[in-house]
Image 1 (cartoon, rainbow, N blue to C red):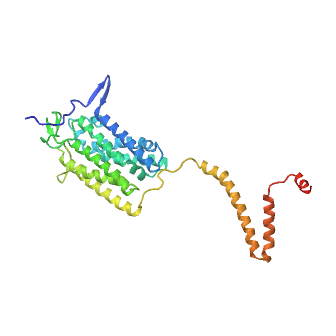
Image 2 (cartoon, rainbow, N blue to C red; image 1 turned 90 degrees about the vertical axis):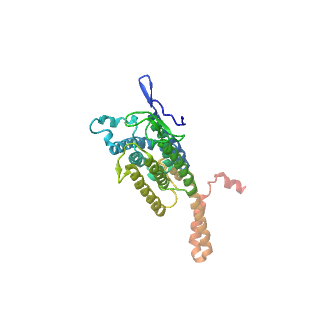
Image 3 (cartoon, rainbow, N blue to C red; image 1 turned 60 degrees about the horizontal axis):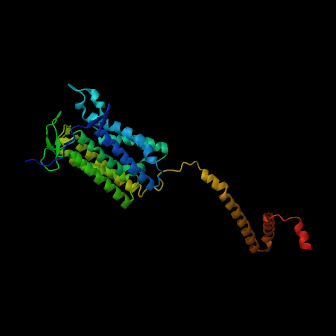
Length: 340
């Protein structure tokens, strides 16, 4: 009896003339746009300027792609080096193979450079981008569907994914772990947005929450996968990585809440050069200062008059002279008019 299943694309690339359009690349690009779009909205809501998230992403995205590929090649080196392997394949990123751990780690380095150039605290920027990164991962995982990779054990569940025969894989229906992780990432994004609104997370804690929540899901999803991977003590390497990164994220969250409670009041400094401040001091503020000085002098004269006859004469004389100096000039013809 036939069972329901999720069919896989017969090919992951469509050629537009000589130009190949790859589903994996499109999923990555869509994810980047979603992350920048949502991150920009959250950054502006935090008091930042439009376009800042995209400017820093110009640094973070290339670093992240390189980091993700490096992690994959290093942890799965047997796929690219050794007998019967071609090391040039390590550069074929369009065929799949990006490790999120390396992408986040090296992407953070690129983001740090961009933030330093703009005078922006990296934790605040990371908080704004955190749910967007989770959604970007949700989009990117569908690239694995196009490449028929990242699936789990064989199953006959109605939502199983159909995999065709190919190198290092047998035809059949398997757990769609790419789909599980995609849905989990959507849930992580919703969790971070809710927690950030509810508890006003700051100083990198929204990002730490995203990392911790993602690691929980990645741990059990990774455990279901059947593709080739390195094992430590009988457990897949990425499961151990999830555990370690989860613990580090929780430690950071707790320590940050104790050392730097609350949220940043200013996330992006004003870099207008102080022009407005200068104009205020030389213009309106300058006039206000003159008026304030005059009022202070009049008040001093009155207080001197109340102090007593011994000390009042000099102060009254001084106040009278200053008062006369502040009187408007009178035309020469005015006294004669008064005489008449």
